[in-house]
Image 1 (cartoon, rainbow, N blue to C red):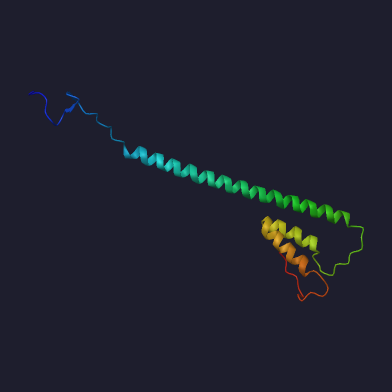
Image 2 (image 1 turned 180 degrees about the vertical axis):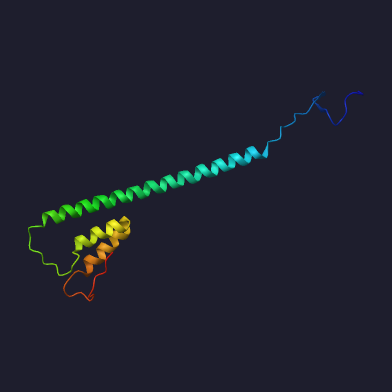
Length: 126
């Protein structure tokens, strides 16, 4: 077999066949696909984070509305609070400035310290 050389053909089950050559993948295409996957992953993470932040802002808005309803109900009562920003005003300022968890933590600490025999002689603004 003069026309068949060992480099081009291989013997399979008694027959000589031409081996299948794989096409080389172009590197720019695989790099582009990797970059697209990376970017879409970052976008999805950012969207999920933004969704989480929007939910926390919604909780802030609900808390502020609830506090304003409380303030409107207690308008006709005699104010006994000796501190200038009352606890409800302090809570509203905290929810406007901070995210839900931090504002809740600061509001609870303010409510804990808001009593006449407290060791704390001043109240910080949020």
